[in-house]
Length: 247
Ligand code: ATP
Image (cartoon, rainbow, N blue to C red; front, side, top):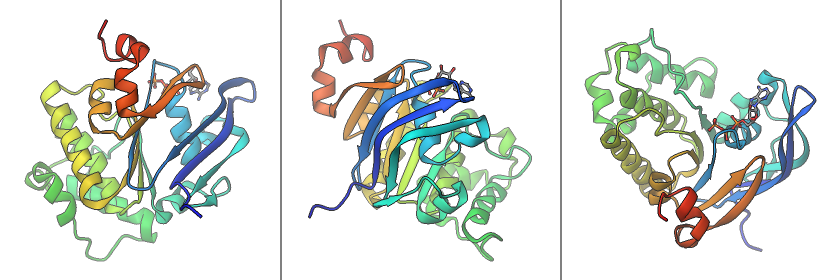
């Protein structure tokens, strides 16, 4: 039998405040070792899908009302977010959510708390610094003083500390200048290529997302409308016109 996909989202529906239906029977998969892009316009429900996977909907009075989500073959509906981190599923949320009043290194240390409940005694962040030398240079500085791009690096670095097999990455390009965006996406591709970390990448910027992804999904108001390999997507007339900006 073929190995199951690392992540399988099977026909889920999501409702906020018991009334507002945001996802309407959505299915997708993330194969092991792949980067999967999830694209779509504002408000389509992309962040909601990521929160459904990492079990963060309840905080916003949201819930998965039908369907199933499996990670490494296991139904994860009943698992708390910190349990999912320990199992290898890490959600890098939109807006970075770093601790601005802590140093870069303290932010990385905080990420180990989710793993052990008390922080590793002598955590090594060499791996993080090898991908992001700039974080090493700034390790004693307050995270709040980092540039937007460096904060995004720190958000991804915190994920790496947890040694995940799957990273849910929400809008890493948000608010970044083109050069910084390019730098970050190059590192995202390297992390995937060097370590086989799978990623589900939510992006408004389809061009940068499809440059690193292996396959993709496009959603509109709670439903998928197009899916397939990156090659298929970049040759699709609607994708070219509405998402990539070619006529
Ligand atoms: P964006 O790129 O703008 O973040 P998105 O595709 O990630 O868009 P979501 O943030 O998932 O979209 O939002 C999908 C829909 O759900 C939107 O109509 C939004 O207003 C609604 N929504 C999101 N969070 C909540 C919430 N906590 N309560 C009620 N409605 C919500």
